[in-house]
Length: 268
Image 1: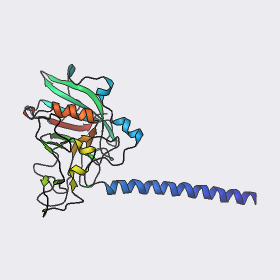
Image 2: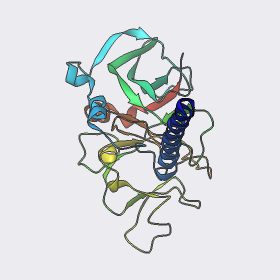
Image 3: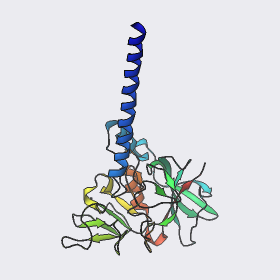
């Protein structure tokens, strides 16, 4: 009887552990499947995650040109006209966290602007093969030409619009794919999933910069709605996210006359 009881007890423990793993896996799949109507954060913020939102400024770091002239950490295409760069560098393609650094062009190289800060990227890391409904951040060199937010312009020089309930980012197939559209009724697109009502994504889209991946022109199903936005301390569905204070400093620094770009990639 003692041996039989022990076997039963072991079987029950294994069954409970299997059930727990199954529920955790199901929850992860549901999180991926339910949040892909925009590239905002993939999960809710918790008190422990909120700590990750703090910026370099909170630790006394000054946002200004700093250090000597060095090469950029990624070897990607940069037109001669571009004199402002934001690099987002992961150490492995599967990493959900990367290092973001702003750069100003200098004679014979680049000079850091401000501190290196932690950035969250997609749940599936950084990819060279992005596509719709795949929560990874596209690798490459992309222009930064538009900013927006639910909050008033914090001093951005880039074109900036304040979002309302009429502002949508379209991810459904059609002529409006991967574009910003303003519509209050009788819209040519679905006012719901898979499209994103920008003002409703908070706090992520309190401030944001559009990453011009797959925009000019937009290729169907190649991926849409990629932004640099406010972090909630968790991986995103493909966007790049940083602390609120850091993003405000970046918005005030980015200048359309400098033809800014964001470089996203892997550097072991």
